Structure formats: C-alpha cells, structure tokens
Image (cartoon, rainbow, N blue to C red):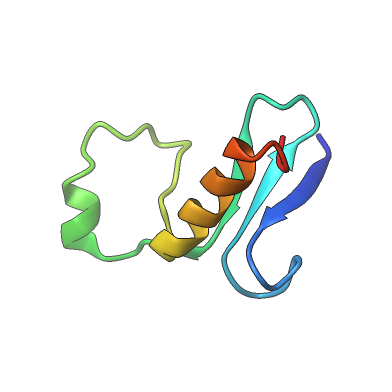
Length: 73
C-alpha cells in the first residue's frame, strides 16, 4: 500500500495528518492514540484489530474540502 499526504501541516511529521491510499478507497489518519479507559469503554463494538486516534476537527474539514475541490484522492 502506498500513502500520499493529503491534509495536515506537518508533511509526515509528528502531528496529525491524513493520507490517501493508492487504490483511492481508504484514507489513513495519523493522530494521538486514544488511551482514556472511560472513552474506550464507550466503543464496546470496536473490533480488537482497530484503534481510535484523536485529531483536530479542522484537519478533517481541511481534507473534506480538498476532496470536494478535487485536490485529494
């Protein structure tokens, strides 16, 4: 799988980013892993192979705008 940076200001650095996959069907999100036990308990239906990351809302809005404008994917 090949990832292309699509949103975020760090360009693969140690901060939240969004990446498109080479097949265009998935995106990868880089962020801080959610480790709060109370919050994780609210996600009881989450499969063991998945994880949750926290990113600024603005990052997702930036990505959505790029997709809407045709600049991402």
